[in-house]
Image 1: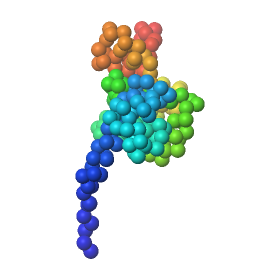
Image 2: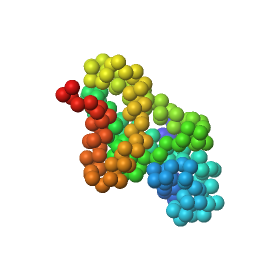
Image 3: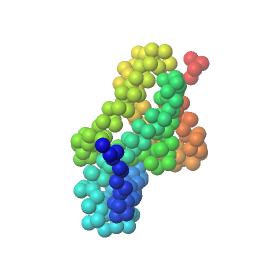
Image 4: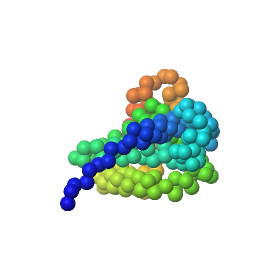
Length: 207
């Protein structure tokens, strides 16, 4: 039996993939800058430099565009977590993930989450890629949270799901934007400030 030989994509297929990647990157940036509701397909097409009709050959709707961007970020998160040293303690793993989220947000690469009644919510829920990634991410973070609680490094009185959602909330935390707009702190300082409030809280350790 002859071994299967990988078929190299044609030049046209490679160019289509490059264009699709450019579209998704543009959508990602626009979602980070203004959110799903304010972003328009016309705007995406103009910034990519193609006709709207050509854009629709890749993605059938505005929702499909946004889902592709969200899936892209989800895969980036999965890749980051997979590359973390497995021997690191759970709390250190969690801090690394939250720091990565903050860095992505400060760099303008974190899409704003849709409002509760947005049509994008339903599209994300219907995306197998997105939901599989979300479940995998939640399971991994949840395991670290429970281990950190067992070691008394995170408050064991809090439900693990509440801590998980607190970490997820850092992806859409307006505090990051407010501190950046104020111009008083560097990105690295903002990371440290938000990490401190997230993990150490606001109460003085002297009390």
